[in-house]
Length: 313
Image (tube, rainbow, N blue to C red; front, side):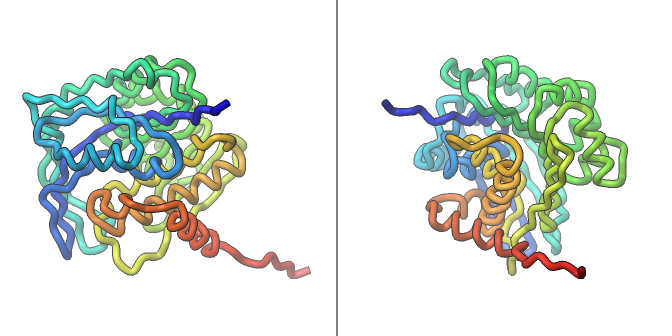
């Protein structure tokens, strides 16, 4: 008898970006939180994508998602509209960026509707969209085993009550350190994580860019995942979404627990996929990977913190 693999649903943006870095520029760069998440997670689990695009969204991008094994039957194509577009410029240190243009287009009226076959999926990731829509998606699911969610400072500012409402249903919240401080009102990152967990999420992952990520888990334990020291970062866009894809993708693998040591391993796979993402524009470096290449980089991450225990007594 064939045992079916668990499915991982991601709901978020699918976009066309115009990326400017200190060394290069790409005017038509396929992006979006759901795109990066799905491409990263596809190597680890069975991914189902829900999003919306317009008539200008390139056919090759849909083909790439399908080639990666992503189920795109939840991707709505609006023929009389245009895809969500974002233009941004990164500065010399690549940690800071300036938004130059944002055109929501069809994304402005996005009302996620999950295909019937998606609703029984065991794993759900609510990528960075309006908290009210995240709640709507959660209500469409049957009983997911694990729910992850990402958010941003905008929703913390203008939709705080809606965000806090959906956080009560979340097992893993991912956000950066600035967002954690804003949501909690605490400057100290440990106090901030504790305050955020009190809002509902059992586990909180705080992304810190080139400094790695911190996991504050349901047992009160803290785990620090390093970032891979890279000589050159080509494009940081989508790194956080790729991290989430690797993280959730690992947890959605058959037989993997969703707590304890498995969460720590998931943190490393998240860091692995984020490190590939930043090495190219769009999802260029996430396309065409194989298990051996991913595992080799996983081992590289393991060696970053491999040390012999010692005692002074």
